[in-house]
Amino acid sequence: MQRIEDYGAIGNMRSIALVSTRGAIDFFCFPRFDSPTVFAALLDGKSGGTFCIEPDLGNLRTKQLYLPDTNILLTRFLSDSGVVELTDFMPILAGKKGEIYAHQIVRIVRIIKGEVRFHVRCSPRFNYARSGHKAICGDNAVLFCPDCADVPRMALHATVPLLLDGSDAIADFTLKPGESATFTFGEASPEIKILDPEAIENHFQQTAHYWRDWISRSSYKGRWREMVNRSALMLKLLCSQEYGSLIAAPTFGLPERIGGERNWDYRYTWLRDASFSLYAFLRLGFTEEARSFTEWLHGRLHEDAEHGPLQVMYREDGSQELDESILENMSGYRDSRPVRIGNGASRQLQLDIYGELMDAIYLSNKYGDATSYDDWRGVWRILEWLGNNWQRADEGIWEVRGGRRKFLHSRLMSWVAFDRAIRLARKRSLNAPLGDWLKTRDAIYDDIFKNFWDDSLQSFVQYQGSKNLDAATLLMPLMRFMSPVDPRWLSTLKAIEDRLTEDSLVYRYDTQGEHIDGMTGMEGSFTACSFWYIECLARAHQLDKARLLFDKMLGYANHLGLYSEELGSSGEHLGNFPQAFTHLALISAATYLDRALSEKEFGPWH
Image (cartoon, rainbow, N blue to C red; front, side, top):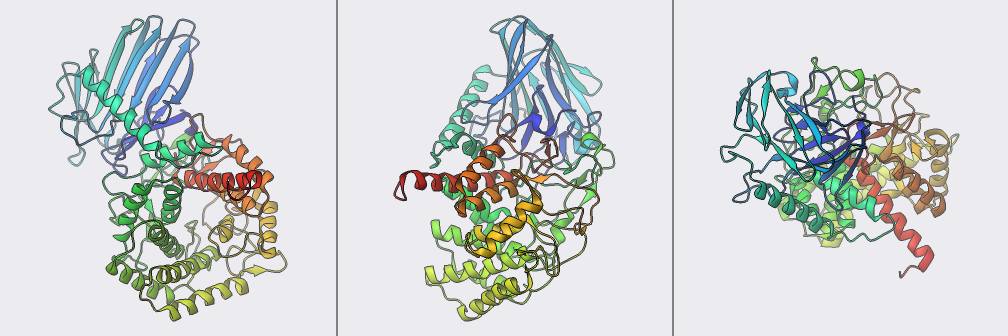
């Protein structure tokens, strides 16, 4: 089984496939991000399903890269007897007339050197490998018909002969220098009768142009342009083209500790990501993505959920049904069970989401169009509820399952909710009960300093009455709650350094201490927290240290510049992959640090 970090991602903003350095597609949900898997060998190497293209080369070495400024993936196989290139992409310009290969995975294998024999196996396992299927072989095509009525039929087309091995499609063929073979896999379409090389080439060129044109609009020209651009391209892949929402990650069930039980489904849209997403896109000049996500957020202003006006997370279309269950048929990544789909945390009370929502609305109004009258009344409704509930205990940002507590971060983001609403009302001259909002905002401010500051630790603590520290506290200066050079903040930063960090790696909290999350065992360091820590250092004018640690964190990316959620004790990637939250935090840290270094070197007017 390949490691989590041994994969690249391709997609079309409707779904994403993970391609290993060995040329195997080992994870793919279809037709949407949150649909059941078709390939899931990453979670069960025996029965999960895969689509592999294997060159018969001795002493094989591989190298994988994205074509510059695109999400087109190139896997190169090298040996003394031959060089092979495998190109993987999903056409982007879907839905236009004549685009018969829309919503397909396109795989093109070319011979650069030598004469090479190939072995291909396409073994889909539908409905999370819980449903069987029939395979029907035709002229250079295989139609896969799932037994489950809710799962669409899919087809594999090729420019080489295909055969059946049970319900799998296979091919064995030989190519000489300059020759190529093409495969497409996706929704069954009567329009595709035989692969058209010219149409495939047009799709390739259009897709490459789309990505290069999109990333060329980035306003970031700083020191870490390549890594920031790769993060932006990854985030764009995670944006729903249909709805404008942003999913947290394309995968589920990948563990936060090998053999552990923290194996969650991240194929959904978290409100928590809202302000970070908008900030990242706006900082890079991508106003269209920010506007689309804002429109999606506005749709949530007029809804209700189980524990208040808002739900923690939603499906990409805004629906709220995310019931959690366990896939008993899957062994899990490196035997890490249970493998969960759905997410029970969607039904938790997490008060911080109201601050993240309001920060997003504030940013969209500051840099985009003004909010409508009806949406502003929706804000009133939400803040009225929050004004009566901000003192409640909840499950907090880390979605603990060990019981509710009065978390500092939930208080902080409740303060943000009222602070941003007050700023917005004043900036846009909007009618608002400013007196009530000011009173509540100031009450939360006083509560934080009174009930969450520990004199003996000289630090803010994770929750009221606790001696635990929490890396989420790093957001206090980033959310402009307090000065990044306030003595109380600097001593808190020092306490976090002493107790939660190892060089550039930052842990969310002490999992061996008070067992607040209701889970057993430890977890890896949380990569987004590392970038928050670095940005806090930069804002505290510790630029040399911040730059050193930032450069070190870039070294933990995989070979393509992608990050999962966490890093294990040996630097291995853990958790769902690729992780939007990590790339959002990277962009925020890179843009601030780059600006601070330039001002130090050239002056504030540079």
